Length: 172
Image 1 (tube, helix red, strand yellow):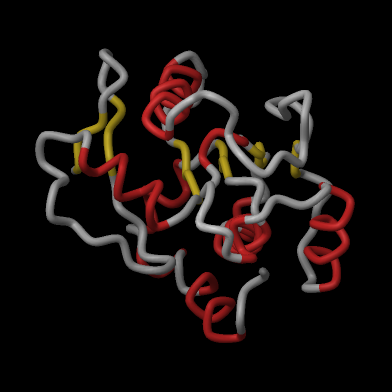
Image 2 (cartoon, rainbow, N blue to C red):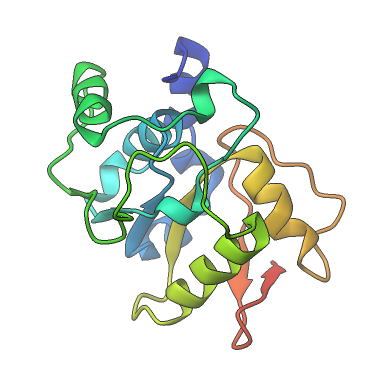
């Protein structure tokens, strides 16, 4: 499922919700492979013209609802282009699992996938990264912080965090 008109408008306001100097520091955007997250990333960070990596570990999994069912990347790209997204800077392949699209996450737990993602992120050279994913994924990240419990994710409203040396997050 893609973004509604309301969702597109919310994504378009991401830049205004981040301090301009911080927004300009973003070196990389990482997104879930699911259409609504990718569409949000394309709209919200379009002005940066920075690389966007699709990371398959930060997608929502389960519940059988249509927006959580992964699709072939060619279909996602077609939908993104139809909605005016420039897909030239999107790297769909660097982190792509061998079996994609897959309807489950294999034997790895959500926490295991998210820990693997944070470890991957800690190995990157970029200092400032925007991550676009889903409510339940963000909630899981926040529950693992010492100071993020009780924060409720809101559509297209950034939550600024710091990735600590031990691959844990702190909410800024």
